[in-house]
Every structure is written in C-alpha cells, then in structure tokens.
Image: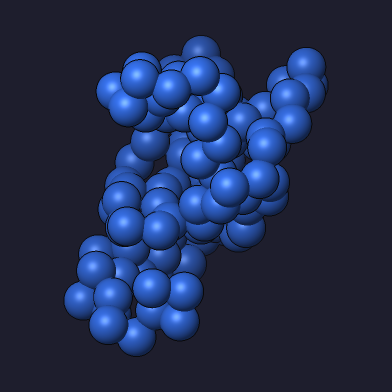
Length: 110
C-alpha cells in the first residue's frame, strides 16, 4: 500500500491509501478514522479493513510503548471509507484533508 496524503488531528486522522500490486495502482480510498477508547477487533482477511486495522494496530503499539502502557485502546472500532473513483473525487478529498486542520474550531467532538 501507499499512503498518499494524510492529516493527524487531535481526535482523528484522515488519509488516502492506494493499493499497489506489481507497481500498478488499483484502488484509491479515503479514510476518516476517529479516536476512541473502545477495543479494536482483529481479522485475518486481506482487504481494506485489514489494512486499516494493521495501521491502527501499529500506531497503538507505538503509542502504548511511548506512554509505557499495555493494550491501552486508542481507536474507535470502525472507520469511514470512501472509494475514490476519478481524478475529480481525488482532488476533492486532497483538498478536504489539507483544509481539515483549518476547521478544527468547528469540530463537534473537540
């Protein structure tokens, strides 16, 4: 996979993942992943969900190491995805990610 663009906010992250197979970009997907205190579930499947779970698991392990904790939950259980199907949609998502920090004062979960 290739993470094309991202922003890390205090209570969520946004990112675009491109799935690359044999150096060919197959799918672009945009994700909004809020932070929560609920426990994460694991799945052995090889799909978008397993990619997001792997990213969350890696980040959780690093965060817990930094704060000297064991299995402290970081993320909410789910995520929101949007498949990017064309360049117009891609540019719209890129702009949304870039502008998201400017809208922090409007975040209702802040």
